[in-house]
Image (cartoon, rainbow, N blue to C red; front, top):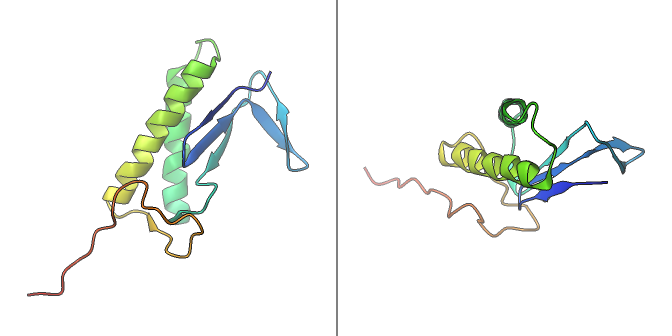
Length: 113
């Protein structure tokens, strides 16, 4: 059975991807980060998300793979993504079709000196 957690920017599925299709799996989690391309990502920023995902999954090692546990991981990753935005590691993609500043208004630096 396919379990999932979908927040606005983090989608987690108990599945593998084969031929662009999700195939349910009882022991594999698949992560989709920012499916609407709302943010500008560097490879390092994406790797930070993947490392945090691995860390959160490892914390549940031995626990039942339930929708509740997957949702907690997704929620924690969503908060982590917000922290990357607040630190300026990622930024809003102003060309996104879903421009809505869902993680808060962007910071604007004043040129007054």
